[in-house]
Amino acid sequence: MPWTSTLPSRPAPRPDGSPAPSPVRVAVPRRLLMCRPQYFEVSYRINPWMDPDRPVDTPLALAQWEHLRGLYESLGHTVEVIDPLPGLPDMVYAANGATVFDGKVLGARFRHLQRTAEGPAYLDWFARQGFTDILWPEHVNEGAGDFLRAGGTILAGTGFRTDPRAHAEAQEFFGLPVVGLTLVDPRHYHLDTALAVLSPDEIMYYPEAFTPGSREVLRSIFPDAIVASGEDAAAFGLNAFSDGLNVLLPKAATDLIRQLRDRGFQPIGVDLAELLKGGGSVKCCTLELQGARD
Ligand code: ARG
Image 1: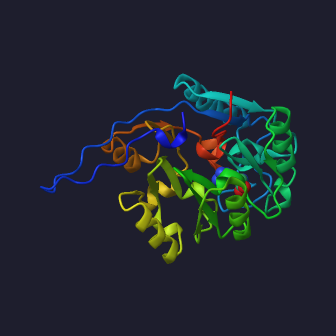
Image 2: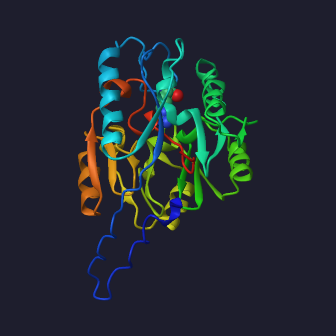
Image 3: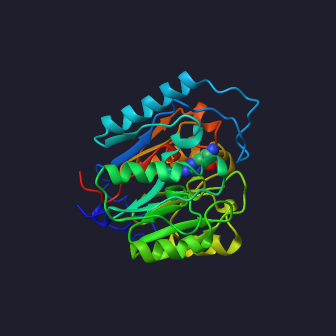
């Protein structure tokens, strides 16, 4: 089923001003890639969440990760797993490993030396799985951490990690229009920490994480978006995965959970506290293989 056909667009408010009914929500099964946090630790600091002096409980991280994986499977999604490599503690954040739209794979080229080797490791997995349309990029991009698909458009983050020149590279490779968005708050260094796509034409986001111009752009494309409080954004509530009906997000994001329910979604609160110590949660641990054949 084409990805864009999942939902009707949001109905306009009724003439008497009463709110439009929520659209019928339909969960569409996805194919996901995850990486077990076997070698997860916080041994360096490349974002403000990481504190190498704060111990990480790796067995607990593994248990929290297994719970997330189990949830995906219980919701009918297919989870593929890539082997983690020792010495690459951030490899658990699979969202950064590549970007996959319409079965085409754009490799990731990391900003920091500590993560550089993850790019080829992920591309190698794709090649071994039989993906053929693969591009090793010229410019720095941190995969689906900064490239999110909303219907026929790619929302692309920059400001901290992904080079804006990578936006043009993605547009050319995928043949989809790219809307560039600039992040300004170091706590929200990847787009998927400040914005989540809920359906082809619905998002939730934290406006303060963006430049004034980018906020304007988001307001004009998504006038009905769910807006997150600073508290929920700081709880990584926007680092969420949506299948069109179920939305998995950190359970601490209570106001977002309420807003999602009001819109007819089924929010599912998840505890990934150990992985938050590296600056990531649900969405960071998940790479959607969008448009890939089984
Ligand atoms: N420690 C990792 C980094 O700073 C966390 C990555 C989180 N991933 C994400 N998709 N936001 O690169």
